[in-house]
Image (cartoon, rainbow, N blue to C red):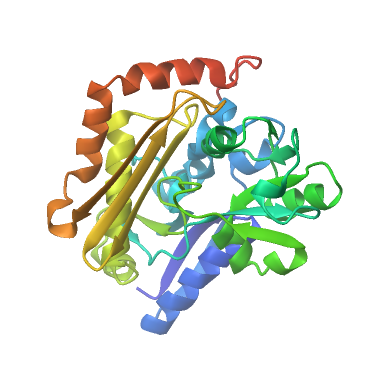
Amino acid sequence: MTKLTIATRVSDLALWQAYHIKDRIEASYPEITVELNKIVSNGDKVLDKPLALIGGKGHFTKELEDEMLAGNADIAVHSLKDVPTYIPEGLELVAVTKRQDQSDVFLSHNYATLEDLPQGALVGTTSLRRRMQLLKQRPDLKVKDLRGNVNTRLRKLQEGEYDAIILAWIGLSRLDLLKDVPYTQKLSLDMMIPPMGQAALGIEIVSGNEKIREIAESLKDENTFICTQIERDFISKIGAGCSAPVACNAVMENDMITFRVMIGFPDGTNIVHEKLVVNVVASKDLGSGLAQKMIDNGALELLKHAEKIAFKDEMPQRL
């Protein structure tokens, strides 16, 4: 083959990620020209509703998958956190790139840290996971939905719509945007557990093409793949959708894996939190096993109720 087409969203961060993978492929396979198929996903179009009410983060991946199934792209580059645990027939998630810093970051123009926010301060986030963990630590805060691309969110913060916002550190770092905010505080993984797959890229391919598989697997980082598979196994087993606050993160260091999970209500109550440390050789069923333990202790009922109260003032829109 002489040409490979990558399906990608058109946000600044998605394009950074796609060009990063394009450069890596062309460096390893100089005989191949890589082109981008740039797609405006539904998740990028509907900005006046929380993601959970338009079908969740799967709306960031569906159009890319449709392009691949239609023969218009060979691979898709996703933020792994946006990739549902179910992959459509005819496609495969074959590689996960080396994960960088998974932390969330506190951003403000007036307050140096989360602890410095005054009583009743307004914090912006789209994430029920962040909402849950923020209100667990600071039940006095007011949390308001925050949609739009990264630049839009930073503009809203600068214009004073929020006292602070919480975003993923990695996206701001890749786009060199941290320098534009006076106060930033990287939140520890114990303070703010990330979502499944944060800070890694997922490489999805059309099944049946061995050359495409070879190229995609050349991008794979084995340790990141192990950790993110644990996270995806947990989410798949527990059946947590984006309408329920769920945090889930595995980190490997010196052949030991630390696995943190948290579920609860969006208002920061009814929290169930687990943190396990195991050797990598014993980690194969860590995600699904911990999910089953939490299911046995009533997690499904907790999540069902959390979904009911997450957006009780808004009717879900299924698109």
